[in-house]
Image 1 (cartoon, rainbow, N blue to C red):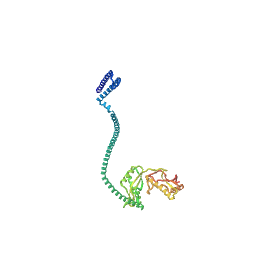
Image 2 (image 1 turned 135 degrees about the horizontal axis):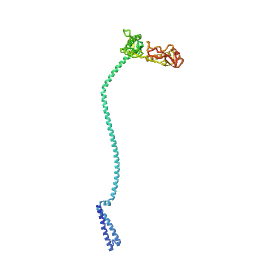
Image 3 (image 1 turned 90 degrees about the horizontal axis):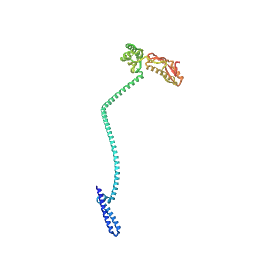
Image 4 (image 1 turned 90 degrees about the vertical axis):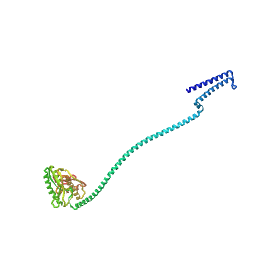
Length: 390
């Protein structure tokens, strides 16, 4: 409404001024007046121009009077332009500052999120560390509780070690004495040495078997022990056996069909003049070697002197005897399994070894099927496939 009224006022003012100018122009034209010595025609033009100028001036005066914006546009435009330029510059600077502030804010926000993540990890690590600390504290308490009994156990172990050291020294002294006795021939039987062996028939009442075992112990086994210097003081016997072992052996033989090899074996090392504690070894009558089976063999260097070759042959026969004993074969009173090879075979075997030359294989081969309860074991000597009996 304010603008409409202003437009109406301007139109009205312009119309009045134009009307007055027109009246003045007509009067000057009718009366042919002259202004400033000008011709009437030019005077009319000047009045028209002055009227137009007055109209414009009146409009500007009215607009300036009623509108501060018009006054500002007319008289303060330069200042407005300068102020606008400054404002635009300030706006640009503020935008740049705003951009920088936003960048800083974004960086700070990222740092804040990273700090929060670090804080969360640190809190988790703290919880884990506290749990581990509590666990370790519990372990420390447990170890402290165990420390005292462990210290006591260590002290007991130290005492036991001291006792064992003394016992070791005593046993070493006994071993030394036994070695001395062995060296000077004072040992009647060594531990696990066969005292005597026999063959009994199984499948009979245990009482009968027991009588046979007692006859064996009091007869051949006792005589073998007495010959080696063992003896129970004040008696003509030398063997000792636990009664329960005698009963067990009788029951086992009674429950076994066929022949059974029975050995009386020394329980410990026994010196001459002392009784021999014995136990029984029992073996079923089984085929231990087949005819033609290699019982033992060894490599022999033919370049050795004859006496060394003889020792190699006798060593092989000793291996044959030992293997047969391990398999449960009955032994003679001399502790062997019988005739392993004839004495004529031994020199023949040495001769064949020397003829062959180099390193040869000497074998002991079973002559026939051999059973553990049916001796003796008979073998022949072969040198690289040739029999020493040929």
